[in-house]
Image (cartoon, rainbow, N blue to C red; front, side, top):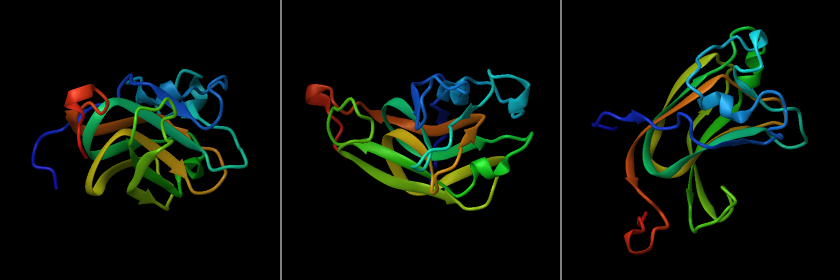
Length: 167
């Protein structure tokens, strides 16, 4: 359990999702600080993937290594609760400097949610250290996220020469 106050560290950080960001519901919408959960009112709100052959996912690059305490997820309230169900929240630590966010990385599950949800404050079940946070469905269906907050404390930078963080 974390004893220090943590900050929200994902707002306006780089994001990716499994389906192309040329799709109308961009991944960046989930960290833009807009908590509107009514996706049908505008394309500016929420991110959403398309159906594919692989499980859908969304991820944020925190830009450094953080000790992650919890992840707060705001889903849709206008419909489609099933687009936020049967998913894992993963904390990912790169093992070397790589342009691919997930290649050669250590991936640990912070939390798993089976039931559909419109809002979730997921506390990691153990200490989680990483640079990326990914929300990944277990099945190939659409994933919809309206806002994602990642709370944690700064640990350091991974690939900065003599000051590399040893995890």
